[in-house]
Length: 213
View (cartoon, rainbow, N blue to C red):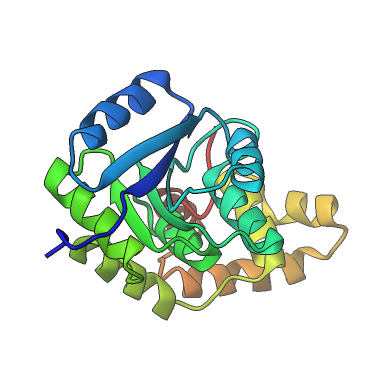
């Protein structure tokens, strides 16, 4: 099906772990029609390479990197008009990771334990102009897109709920009444389909809405 490709698909690997970069370079370098032309150890280095380097068709992008994560790279690429195809390749599959990646412009989403055959298929599919999101990840993306968005204020309050602050404490920090905080918390509980604030906090962590150090 792909034998008629006139040129190799030129790939940039972006991951802060050298073992991962080396492994992917070896794994993909043996595949006909694919060529790893470079690697970057950070989001900042990836952007510099994309700005100055020519001939990169597709980026395999890690999500969790220090200083500049994969979502930030995707958003920066959009702002700067960099149209290189991107597949997120990560160890994480929370609902929010998937949703934010696709919203930011990723055309594919793979886990690092993906088989070689599927990774190659994803690269070729995305390079050809289509999305590649495995079925189980696509179903989670659909569920996430159907849920009501949390407002910036709700996210702010949710992060404090996760930290264990009471309504009164949150009110003091945000300089709003505890009654207003309670209304926001009730809204959060409803949107997250939780029974109470404790379950809302647990759900937020499990779905990756709020990160925990």
